[in-house]
Image (cartoon, rainbow, N blue to C red; front, side):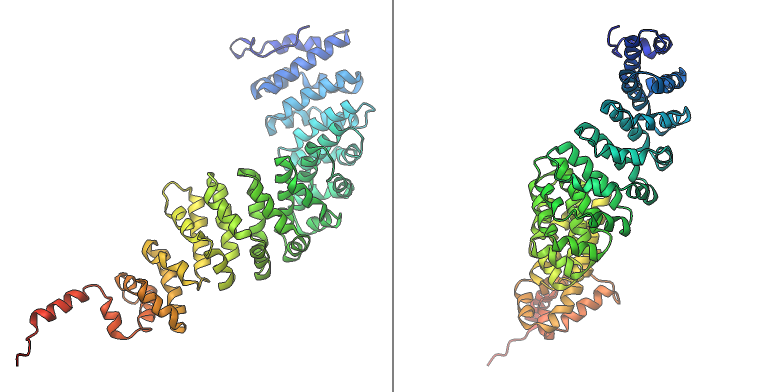
Length: 483
């Protein structure tokens, strides 16, 4: 029988299912296998065809044969179940409802690695949809056998077993805990240095999905001594290994200052900054977020990001990334670094980041999320920033809601710094402040008054709008004294 392709199904008529079904019961094993493979390819193609497999009452027959037949048929049957289950939670539920899970779990103990692999793959495609389906896979007893599969010598089987453990763990702390209780972490952690890039991707992903849920789970991952080993993955040739390693470090760093400090002590911040510099686009996104999470915890941790030269790298991401969601993450991270003290704010301000944030906030092309994150970052940095050269351009460009914070910072610094007061006059800052129209009694007006109180009255008058006209009027009305 020829391998079936999908093109010949006329107008989506799926009568072919009723032709293939009897072939699954054919006395010739190769015909059974080819029919199952054909069904798998059809079901894989789109969800309409997958639904036709379900409606054609083919699943019970496959499940029955899965337990009885030879390894070639088992692989083909597991492929059909995977192809049906991948499309939607409803189709995956249909597989659960026909009793396939118990049979697939039995296949995880088969002597043939290919059968184990096909079964693990099908279970992963069911578990990935939601917590209920994932729980059904757990209840069928899959987890301990998947942990055994990651210890098998075949790389392909290791990969798919790690991927399925990742899909089970991702939905909830309870599901992740069942994977941990089966002893998965130690075996996963041992394979971080595997030479196979695809396996490393899956290992790092599974550890991330476990660590993300809670402090306890993150600590258990850390206790498997993944540091500093995992940092070598940030230099990997494979972009997705880099991305998944950054994600794992992010998921650990976000929980507590102690876990973030542990990553700093292992050299993790500098390694992530290097990684962010070495890649582009979505690959660098988890690294950007990790730096923001570390900086958010405390002044000292934010300073660790500054010392490792994280700010210039984040500024580059902010300027050069075309995607708004990546710019938004960089803006958020810079805000987390700059919001602690004047020293932190200055470290961000000197990289000329504030004007970039302002233009992103003001741009009608920016997504709403990018505008919100840019505005928040500007405000939190400005409220701590006492580095006046970085603030001055904002007097000319900022909209009223941000201008208020800028003028507020000048009103805090100028009374205590005579050099800054002089510079503020010569640079045109004082003149600009006199031109700001503030509501009487508003906070902005109070700030302006505080600034004006730093100068002699005649200086303030001299720089006020209309002063030159007043002087000219005095010239006009002045009666010269004639001797």
